[in-house]
Length: 444
Ligand code: SAM
Ligand code: SF4
Image 1 (cartoon, rainbow, N blue to C red):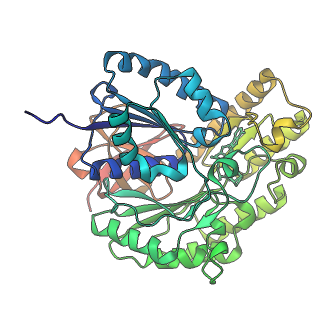
Image 2: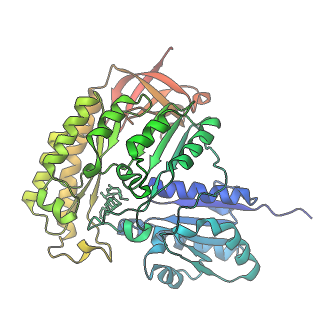
Image 3: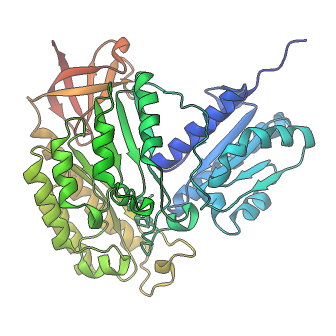
């Protein structure tokens, strides 16, 4: 008898942390004999790795579950799992079970290692399972060996967050901040470099506070020094930086280390000091502007990106104009702009002055218009320059072209052979758009 193929498909929502969790689940399943497939219709196991930072992200998951129900009706052996941050919120696992009783497994962020075993149990017993433990367990290090997927890789350096920004659900679903030991991080980076990875992105909700809980003197600057020394590695990125914890020592360290890329993602969230205080961000707009000036002084050509929230409770037109003013002053290369979304259990959700959606939408539109014009002008200023690009593969919009990123994290599209995927090439930038640059390869 031919043994049935064991196949899986993971659908990931949200941030790079979730992408990394999804990779870890894929490694665990592949070690257990499962094969990844491209289409949900071909999969014996479908996993939704969810996000709950904004309501929109949650709605997408409910919509997807509705679609998957049809696959389950056609194939009752299909195992459907919902994992990730959404499940970690009180009452949500039960709500999903009620709304989508065909879901077989609800798996918390701290229980991912149990996935293969749980799938086998579900297949054998035909009983749904809810496995949601404490988010704050110890950092698990005995995971399967990392499988490199191409030339780029994410490496988690901290789990959780201690900041409790008043709008944010992350500390509730991911627990308090826990740093991985530097030797474990370096071991993982070396393993990846040995498999051909040339660019790593170090991940943490606030990378700048890395090491505080280890209490042995290591900090983020020290960690970067050690990662920079890993042979074979060419580029180091890191997200996310918290402006409050970006020390002058860190600015000089990143300016000195050759592999650390000239790009900082530095979420400011708002430009009004009153709103920053209500958000519990721990810095002022003046501090932020000084930090930007310091980064630009030490690292010429650095690109800066940010996250911005409009319509935080109590945000007045004047507060919002402070945000527009800050954006105009800083001239960010790019920004992720969000409408404030109340999250149950967070402080801001019950603050007075919740704004109507129409106001949030109108402010978002104005903010995006401003940022788009800045992004375009920034890109236009680069036309004519020759830059190093790491080829990521065929362009999503035009498969005959290649797409890749500069050290400053600019997306570049240019003609070239797919065999260059994973390589560093030189590209002359020829045309600018808001979100990307077009270019052509140059020799050498
Ligand atoms: N730790 C990072 C930081 O401090 O910036 C990012 C965490 S969060 C996953 C990514 C972004 O989502 C935040 O920077 C913020 O702009 C946005 N965000 C978080 N909670 C939000 C909410 N309730 N409504 C709208 N946007 C939110
Ligand atoms: Fe959320 Fe603030 Fe922590 Fe970022 S720093 S994850 S926004 S609480």
